[in-house]
Image (cartoon, rainbow, N blue to C red):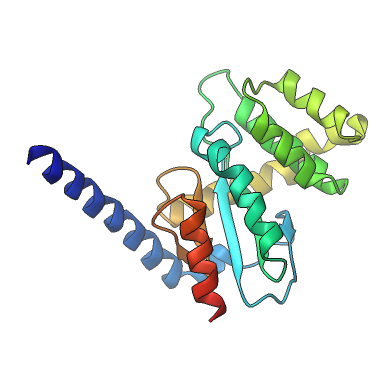
Length: 199
């Protein structure tokens, strides 16, 4: 009985967090407005837009990435937007930040999705393994290194952090479908939300 009560409380708290996020999103739609700097795939005028806030080292993000990519293939009429939100670094460990910057560098060279897939599949993500992934996928490393340290890249990631804080996000991954936060990271839930939005 205590366990059931605890689970019920957790569910209630989880729903309260989603409600807080949806209230924040509704109050400031610009937080989820199209940003030309974000990697995005699918028609720009799509009826449905899915946004993912994620960290390349997040276990949950890695677990759902293959199914999320399958959703993209199953819904070519939907716009999918990637918000690189590195939040798992501690102290001198900057692997999340480095991977986010590297992925954005790959995006500038038209290689975002293949690099995204490889970074999500990499179990021991480090700056060194990230560089190896970029090179393996044909990214021009000299250009990438410039993007990694560019003030524009720093500003882009800082803006994502600001938006996430304003939206009261609690962690990664967080998904939005047409401006509404998903209550679960389960891709099946995202698929249901997509179908509902299409109707």
